[in-house]
Image (tube, rainbow, N blue to C red; front, side, top):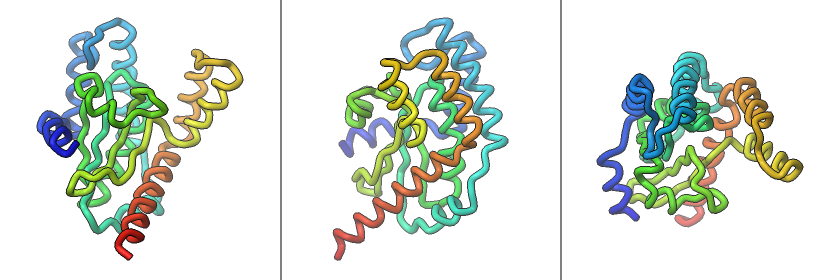
Length: 207
């Protein structure tokens, strides 16, 4: 796996490069990925506007900042994403702000459909769900994974599917309302908890 990840990092994007890629494609009437449809381009356009807004408005909690600044070992955060994905647009701006809080975190993004070999190593309940964050140590051991949604949103999906059988436009609308109210707090809590759990496991193995 180490060789595969190193290879894909060579063609990965910084957050700013990814934002530019998606925006440039939208300007050409396109989306990321091999499938080009009006719907995907429309979703990408909405996501550009959404990320523009979130980049300006999302704020990390003091607790999140303090916990991130305690990191003392380097981590690579590799995120699988696509420009048309609504969940990615909601969560990537938060993840990027978190990564900037520690000099020990390097954030890189790759497109799912160009990197299915990587994606298939990190499925969510058997699905190629994105965004998917994988944290590696300096030896490319997996520290933790997160995705494709914050824990509360994931439970919302599970409950709705149990009651209605599938996700419909009404649910997707309600999910966006939840994201707007949550303001990135749930993903912050999820990720810092995963960081601390991974650190605790490492300490246990060293005892």
